[in-house]
Image (cartoon, rainbow, N blue to C red; front, side):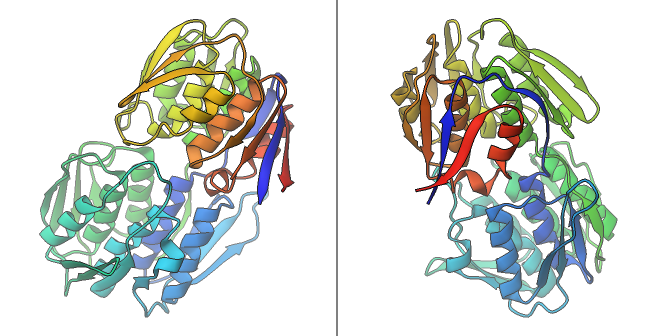
Length: 423
């Protein structure tokens, strides 16, 4: 099992290039099930979750391969769905990844049936799929839950008006894909507005779908008879970009992330500025510098365009070195403070009460052996280790490998002393 060994105290500086967004690639891979020809996703990072979904599609009969890297090193995932004959995803493939549920809507729309194991993933909350199933039922599908599997039957989905009881990114994506081949018009209200949702809508339109309203609370989809294969360049990973910028800020450094979309990161960049960092943004690039103290501020997660829950843990690590007292409030997931106990082992002063964490800044953190519990918690521990005095070991970094492509290489190029070591 691999671990990270970090010698803290180095000021990071330089430029790192952000990878393609995992949370955009996964729904695009699921959308390939709707096509009558190959779908190519340009800029897909090499990540465990992407490999896992590729295996799920192969199990169904699709052909999945990575084609040669472009001139800038980016690779392409090519999916040919024309031989799919088994619309199911077994437990042994999807048990580690919640995003596998994204194949449910496309399978129901294209093949009229689906059998998917209830998804797993990081232990940061229940994250139920009831909104997905409710939407499919409103569109005329029959859904059943039996022996850990979701089964959907639908001769032909039909348009419907769907109101989401809560913001759900994967729910919005799943039902948008299902509606693309449904008969009639589907209106989704209280829909998610995330950039990844908009990227999926853009790709579906290129495939021939009739979709409008993405980026707002109401998305309208007029079903069409078929969709074609496409070549689509995925958007930049705003969560990875935020993590790299915070690595620069927490070490008092000067880091530029090339390829980042500052418009998709406005909430994070605003909070970095409030905390005393200097932010310079231009199209396709963001630079963060910090010379003075970290100002302690309050942060509350909320659906896009609010502060992303996927950056909460990293920002908390940064605030551990603040000059005062701040509150971090988590409103999306009920169990996303598991990194707190590990940060305390480094000397952080954090008190948790329900969905709020009170962070009192300390002058410095001390290196320690740490145990990662989920994807973003892993990143927060790495950031803390970069700024800490002494040596930090981060165990169970397989969590981190689900969402960050060669993070240690990117950090090393910025001057970090970090190494992947096999125990």
